[in-house]
Length: 127
Image (cartoon, rainbow, N blue to C red; front, top):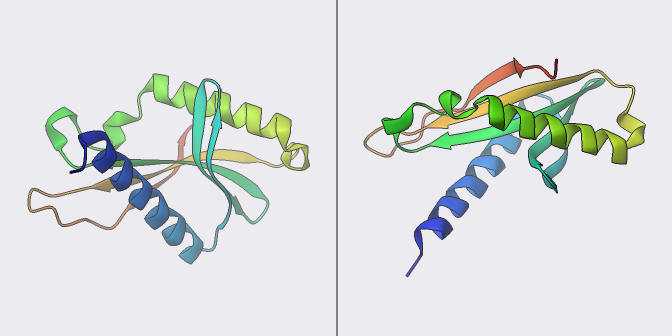
């Protein structure tokens, strides 16, 4: 028997793997996955030419509380920004690269068939 958190965790891992594959097909190079720091996590870290791209992957299987984009609130953005700052401190070879924050969004319809991901480039900034 699977516990509910295991099911959510597996769906999240599948969404991140699908997002990584999708971004690679679009020409990005995935250089890190699931990077955790105190206060934040980076789902994917990619390179698009010279730009370092921090990617937040969001999956919503139920739109009761809004779609996947609605789940990226200011608090979530701040946690990703903090994690990105820590990543840059640890990976100084990327310190001078331009950076951006993208989101890959997955939503499911009521019949549980998955839609293609929506890619939001420059979804938020670290200003």
